[in-house]
Image (cartoon, rainbow, N blue to C red; front, side, top):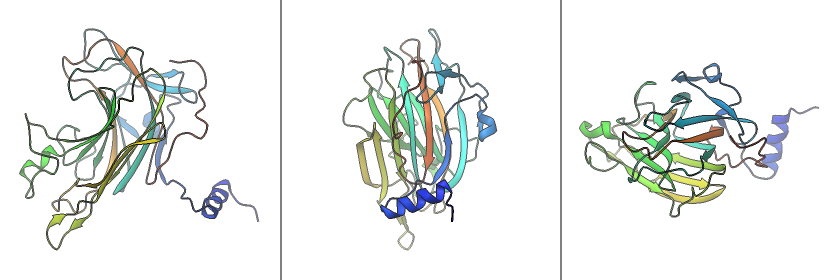
Length: 276
């Protein structure tokens, strides 16, 4: 009997007690035809050489303007799930500058079934953030749209119209212009429907180049107002707020994968070609 490669991997993983990652989607940014692979929203896609395994997507900010150029924000729907993992590689250009504030730039987000496929990330029932802020790897959550919900906000009170819970790495990690492996895990907390309250058992974890740099297993990400909430949308939208761009700079993203179990860094982390 001949086994397929997938069948062989499943048997191998079973023998060693390991779980094969269930992939919801993957993207290597080898060409600009992202919309043919399920992406939507913005039209601009700039693919350049010098990625982790060939090409990568490039986002650029030019002097005198805060609007990102080169590539547009892009979205991707996936099968709804209450737990999600992401792995991608990120490279910041040499001399990268920060906003000088405790927020921005934004980079990537997860959103949920409680909002439409076109809803903006800034004021939703739940938006999650994976981004570099002042050198640290930040995961964050906001639920501004829940201010008038029966059980209210879960991510703190509004301040200046915004709220949020930050989950930052302890150390500054983005200190050079090399490629780095970024990973994050989010798991929705369960609900005590009998007592009409959330259970504080949601999970938030992050890894940088394969090393865990943040972990919380007592997080509340939703209330009983949203018993059917699940993750189902990814949004890639690098963004500096007005007046916060320090100077012209670029970033690159490559080898992205989203799944329901941890994916981990590339096996060999081969770097093909020159730097972009």
